[in-house]
Image (cartoon, rainbow, N blue to C red):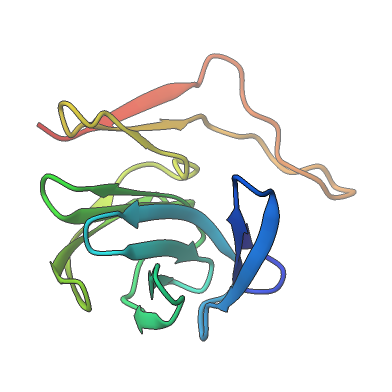
Length: 159
């Protein structure tokens, strides 16, 4: 589980319901979305400072920190194509390829829409779905900008 405030991943034994480890994300700050490559034992944490922390899931050490878009929220790993996707609030989708378990290559930064920072992938088709909506002005006293009526959009990326 990502700990956004401390830039660590908390590891739990789900059978015994116990905390077993705390892994530092090094230079990555404010981790949000997570994905996993079970075959190569890699955990991916999308971080707010435009980095993707890649950790060895056996011992938690950071093996790479490739660049991604600003203010990500979601991350998915496509085992069929060895690609990692992060959805970024700025309106981009970062696409990286796992060249080897310790080496990652940026393939593309796809323009989506501002606010499209949550994503889901259909493992059967490889399509990625990104929901978004337009927002109005943020309230003068602070807080979140309101979502404008009838502006919900579902972006679909992929084959």
